[in-house]
Structure formats: structure tokens, C-alpha cells
Amino acid sequence: MPFIGEILKYHSVSIVGLEKNTGKTECLNYIIKRLPTDYFKIAVTSIGIDGESLDQVTSTAKPEITLREGMFFGTSEKYYRQRKILSELYQISEETTALGRVVTAKALNEKKVLLSGPSSGSALKRWISSLDEIGIDLVLIDGALSRLSAASPAISDAMILSTGAAFSANIKDLVSKTAFVVELINLPLYINNLSKNINEVDATVSSFVDLDSDILKNSTTIGVEGALTDRLLQAVKNELSKGEKELVVNDFTRIFVSPDLYRAFIRRGGKISVRTRSRLLAVCVNPTAPNGIVLDSDTLCFTLSQTIGLPVYDIVKNNYDNEI
Image (cartoon, rainbow, N blue to C red; front, side, top):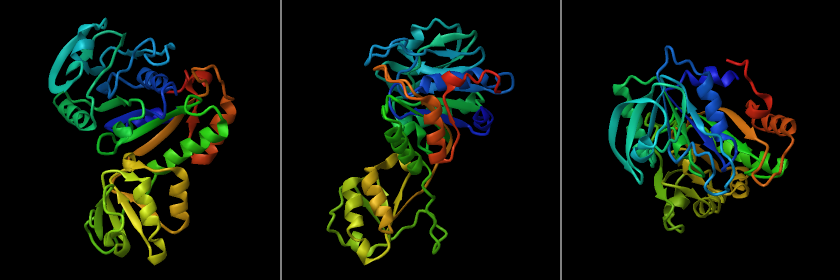
């Protein structure tokens, strides 16, 4: 797939699923299998727990993560002790998780592994920085269920999104929900035409601001500290009749609003921009849900691709073995 070559342009790439069983690990394995390891130092980790053969929630089979010889990986002390892969220890981080400190090692043979790396966005960012000592060229991050923090541009430079029937069993609804997430990922960067300081706004508010505050009434550009919620968005929407309003959020992972309210706000002339954004390289789909529902893969890929304007791949069905 073309995005394999694109991945090599970035220092860190997250693979994020919109729901469990949407093909995130299949996508990661596909990438691992095809990246060059002879001249590229690659490290892999997870912000959750990945690589189990059985899903702990649904009790369904899961694809395990297979590392290639020469790749580095970050996992917890507990899982490192249980490893079956032959490896060379490089670092023991001060970053701790519920399963112990984060261990960084190099795979000396090809084998399946359990990955349980840094458990928070800030810890993950520090761990990535620590890899500079090893000379890592590319870090692959397996995102966790419902935690898009790994995809924050403060942590990873680019991302691949996985979606599928587990997220919605109806193609129209699945396309709509996925397209909304893609729309948020692609929000424009905030540009202050009156100042060279990109962070300068008229005022700053948080999700807990007094919604009757004069800040919302009198400000044109409003910086949002923390999360943008439906409550705050509705309050700003109510002020649109008094003039233009632009909300400035740190990045798309801080936005927790309903599609209907978001689109109503935009239709009324409101704007939402971000201070930093990551690059969405591609979307992968899994048309099969754990409950047995199977969507038509070709229809899903075509419809979603047409809607979001990006390549969409069903890796399992199309088996792009010849694509390098």
C-alpha cells in the first residue's frame, strides 16, 4: 500500500482504532512486515495492552503482534519477563505502569510479543524521547480502546485510523461516524492574522467556565483549555448572533462534541481550529464484527473513501502481499 512509503517520512506514527476489533492490530502487523529494517531502526509499543491471542472483553480470537529481528520494542516488566522472543535489553525506564516499569529491548529473532508500554500520553512522549539515545528512526504506537491520545500531534507526527463493523453494523452509519472523526482530525490550524504569535487569542476558557460569562459574549477568538464539550460549544453557538466566533483547541483529541451540534455550529458561521495537527495517512477497515455481522468490504471501502477523500483499505480481504 502506498502509505507504507509515507510512514518512513515520519518519526512517530500511531495506529488508532475507533473501537475494539476494528483491525488495528492487523494493520500494525501489516506495517511491521513491510517496513525496511536493514537501514531503519524501528521501535514498537502500545499505550494499552496489545498482542493477546484472546480478547479479554469479547473472548474472541485476536491477531498477535509479531516483531521482526532487529526491531526494538517497549513493554512492561511483567510482560518482558514472560516473553518468548529472544531479545537484548537496552533500557529500563523510570516510567511505571500497573504492570511495572517500561522496558526497551531489541528483538533478536522473529516472534510474537505482548506489548504494554507507557500508560499515559505524557509518559509515552517521554519514552519516545528516550529512544534518541538508541538512534531510533521510527516509532510505531498501537493505540488503545477509545483513547485517541496516542494520535495527538504532541505525541505522534502521523496516524493511521482503523474502523469497521464493530464500530457500527450499518455502512451508512459507519461511514458517517468515521467521516466525522476524520473531519476533526483535519481541522484547520489556527492562524492569527493580526499577530505573529500563533497562540494569541482574545480570551481563554475551560470546560468549566461560567457559561454566562462576558468572555463568550465579547470575544471573537476563544482559546479552549482542556476539552471542548457539547456544553461549551452550545454556549458559544448561542452567542453567534452577536458576531463571528472561532474556538481554538489544542488538537482534535481534545474535542468531545456530538456531530449534530458540531455541524449546527459550523452552519451558523462558527469556526473551530487547532493549534497543532497530525497527518492522517490512511484508513483501514474491518468489515467483520465479533457478533458475526459482515459488511460488504468493497462497498464500505469505496463509500468511505469517496466521503473522506483518502485511501481506505481492507488489508485482510485484499491481502496486499506484493505492495512494498
